[in-house]
Length: 158
Image 1 (cartoon, helix red, strand yellow):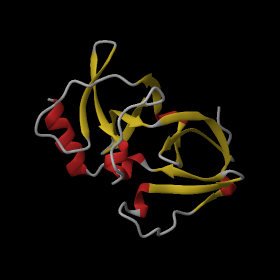
Image 2 (cartoon, one colour; image 1 turned 180 degrees about the vertical axis):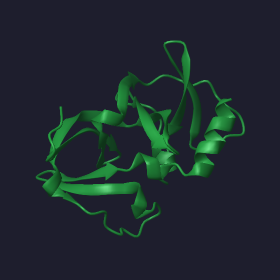
Image 3 (tube, rainbow, N blue to C red; image 1 turned 135 degrees about the horizontal axis):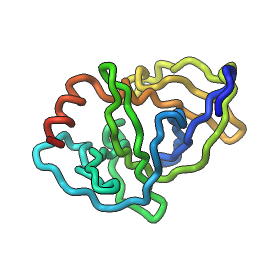
């Protein structure tokens, strides 16, 4: 349960970096499994993952953020999340290198998204938290998927 001054988030790793999404968006965390491939989708679209008989559109978050793809390991997980887009939730599976923990951040410690000048826009960042062991980047999942991306994903999954 989050208090007004706190944010609970699921932290996960992509390479050496630590990212987080609000726990309220996370439906569940799945072990890695091969996806049902969907042809002609964007390069970051891996396919569909079976979630109790329902197909969940699954993307490689590394590729979507412009990072090089890596082979799945025993630590690879799929975060099934609700992405708020155009007034409704799109259920997506995000493939991440590893899930770390549920962390609680004091909202006063969350800094603004810096203009970091790398291949993915700073609008993807909801904020940054400095911790003893480094930074945690809070990902704005709604910004990662534009309306055009959502339309393409829906068309591929249909």
